[in-house]
Length: 187
Figure 1 (spheres, rainbow, N blue to C red):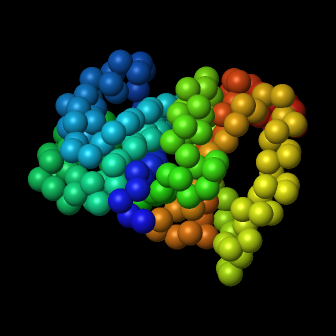
Figure 2 (figure 1 turned 90 degrees about the vertical axis):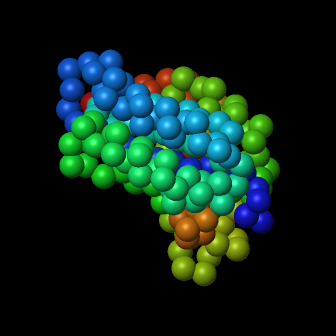
């Protein structure tokens, strides 16, 4: 099971800055170390729409073990040191992994289609204690229909977190940031 590809979400808050180029320069060397890690087979980046100074990285590792190998290596120590000026005392959230191919909607093909969209919503759902076994059946009965009828939604990816299967990683493919915001949220 753990030799399957693992998707990791990193929430990376950075210091307030005037331009993206300023932060890009601050994190370039550290980011190059991370993106050159053995076992990393794909990466995507974006920003939190609601928090201008927060970056979101999705890292696809060949396995959970390759992710852990990087984060316990001297390369991670160097990475951590290099990014400190951009962090300015903030901390990164790293401990969020999900396996690919847990179900049909967590396949690599489905993930690739989600990540090629103009706007990806990263959401977490929480399954009630003892309810993981029936969760996907209920998800398919309700959420799939709702998202399928939403004109701005072009698909989604969902898989349980390795760290706690009651937490579900949900990525939603939106045609734009504007269509991902409910009408009452826009006013």
